[in-house]
Image 1: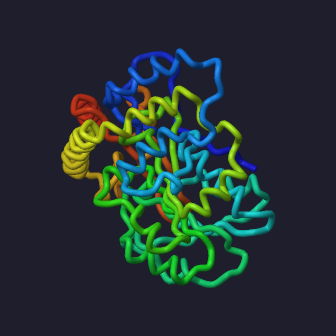
Image 2: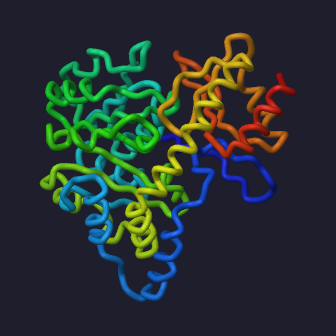
Image 3: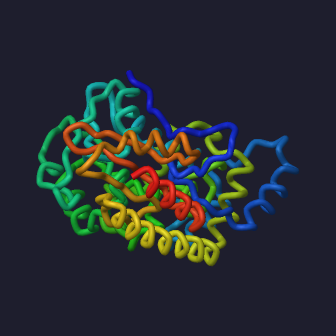
Length: 337
């Protein structure tokens, strides 16, 4: 199998890093305080269920604590779900284009992945609901990567009504979007929502995510997860972060404003840019290849993500940085172009 290739993480040198959708701003100050406090108890194992986080998250998200399962990043939650529902020779149904890690998770299980193209408006097509007893799980990243587009909730509910398998709505970027699908979990127990604190909460280095599902599903998934899949420091930091919703709202607002200005500026430079509901934008060009642009930006100390999806498109996925970082990007791009 081919390994999943994450975005480049430079170990030295001064760069403007706009390639892995990290938050350009620091997390809530409550996080550091909580981690320092938790560091005094490292001789003990962490709570295997993350009870303190589940209680805090239930209040922030208006769900019961029993509907929440903690993970070592949302990727851990995706791994747990795939291990639980998808067996050898089963199928995992995915939109195309979307998060390429899903393919790897299927291959680890000796399963197959089936990629169904999104519509020209980046919505679900009838093919997503086509019956196939081999399909055991469907992943729907919403907002999607690399497009940043958003699938309407009515379509997700309709899909869940038609398909017998669970529908996982991967909401890694949802805090930058209009609304979350968490409320849909109560409408249809086949809907599962995964979330991360890496993006909107600025905790990519902490590695913490969670999922929201029907309590019976959560109890079953606990049989599959590692005994202590989240450590004491990440639990403390994540709990502190999710209690500071005022910080979250302010942070998200800043990033959305920069994203909107960035989109207009990139279009002014001749890029085709989709309207994004995430903390990145997808940029393509009809007049010239984009890979040389990526390479020239890299030589000048600016990292963006070049991505190539066969039979669809290639382009640059650019994370939303600070206003100063984006201004520097635009200056260099004008020179390159």
